[in-house]
Image 1 (cartoon, one colour):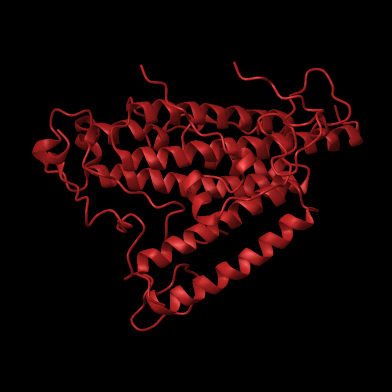
Image 2 (cartoon, rainbow over the protein chains, first blue to last red):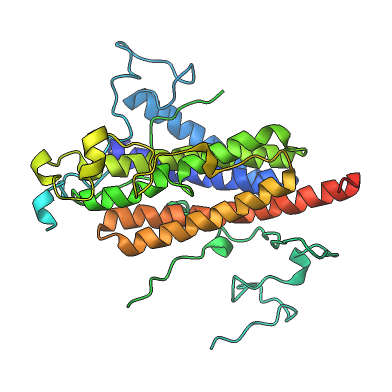
Length: 99
Length: 72
Length: 190
């Protein structure tokens, strides 16, 4: 896969967001077959994408949801509030910029 | 003034709800009671492409009600 | 049991340092209609919900609200993290800084600390679900106030996402209200 870590994470965020939406819809419509089929299809895609991401960049989820390479990756990979997603390079947090 | 669409008008399948706010009455309970609040049931229709859904904050075009900022 | 996922629900992109805006959006980190109050409100109400759909929607929306709380905290932090202290003095963020430094802390934009009096769990399913519908509307209104106050395109973008989530949650609670009413009628509860 030739995309950057951030692009890959963005794909996972898109997939997971769709799954969240379908999950909430199904909570109040548990017998909706089309929504359930869409949920299952996207869940499979999300699981595959996460497994691939985690092999390359370390675990997204703790407590036994993904194995870790040496050394313990969970503590060492970036935390969400340290991740600048895709803005920081071209938009540095320069106080002077806004005055 | 925007005309309020007739909820009983025949459905155009390409665009079943020209005004997504206007739901046909069959999305409401058949019998409604006083002193209760009702929200129409959401019909399961078209979904946004996933990248668009994340940007918009919903997967469902019929629930998308963006904020239009008043200029003053 | 909860599992943490090491990513934000929605990527936030703060455009520049902005202590004034940090001091405003903190309303949704620790204010009456903020994300922490929402999460605790829904997650506290699950025990006394009589139908499975209501238990599910409260658990799931309550969990999503925690992810929104994380987004707001991240924006507050990113708006001030690279700021020299000399640039904080004289801004509305200075009062926050005096106590908490650059750490986000759950209080509202006026500085009042978070309190459990911001929400309730009545042990009554209908009273609870109507409170939740009102809470979603109040949060939507707060986001609109913040969007009007924001001069940072990245923050505004995330606020618009969060505002739309309030609309989706309102719809789900509305559907839950109807399921609860049908259930209560079938039990001749009231």
